Structure formats: structure tokens, C-alpha cells
Image 1 (cartoon, rainbow, N blue to C red):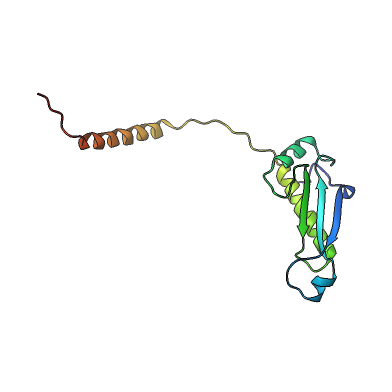
Image 2: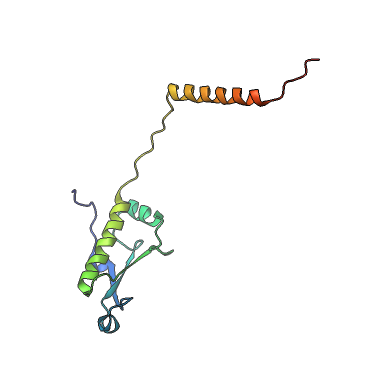
Length: 137
């Protein structure tokens, strides 16, 4: 695996401890083990191209100001949830860091065009046979 061309500074990440959802008994009711990670894309030190692709992603975790909000509550410990949230943010940024492959315009082969025209002619002949005969009087 190649190392990324960017680094993620810990000062740009804002972690907030929140209560986890769902069943779990006393632990869920007393301990704030879930984590919300907030990362502001416009204020980050990422390259401008990565920022633009990141903000263009159709992801509901990115709000209109360009702040990414990730909630992690799968683990029972806050440290594990922090690591999970950070890993999910890195995966999202890595996805945006990959430049899109350039589209190379192509043309259909002659054989495909010939087959299309043959099918079109056959269909036309079938429809022509369905028409009522013309009066030649």
C-alpha cells in the first residue's frame, strides 16, 4: 500500500463524547462511550483538489458548511470508538483523494453497427407484413 500524499492533523479533529443508543443496560445509561467526530473540510490542511472532491461527494455526513460529522458507537470503550471514527474519516478522505479516471471516448465497432442495422431491418420487415394490403385500383 502506498503512503497517502496528505496527513491528517489531530488538531483539526474535534471529538465529542456522547451517550450511545440502543439496549445495553446500565453501561449505556451511565457512560458516554459513543463519539461524534467533526472535521471541517474548508479549514483543513488537505490539498485543494482533495477538498473539492470531498465536498462534491454525495454523502449525508457532509453538511452545507463542509463539516463532516461521523458518529461511532459500535464499541463499548470511548477509545475504540474514537479510533473507529478516525478510521472512517480517513477512508472517506482516501476515497476522495483518488482522482477520477479520465473518460476516453470510444466508438462502437463496425460489427455492432452492422448487427444493429440488421435487427432494425428485420423488425421493419415484420411490421411491414402486419400492414393491410393496399388497393392498387
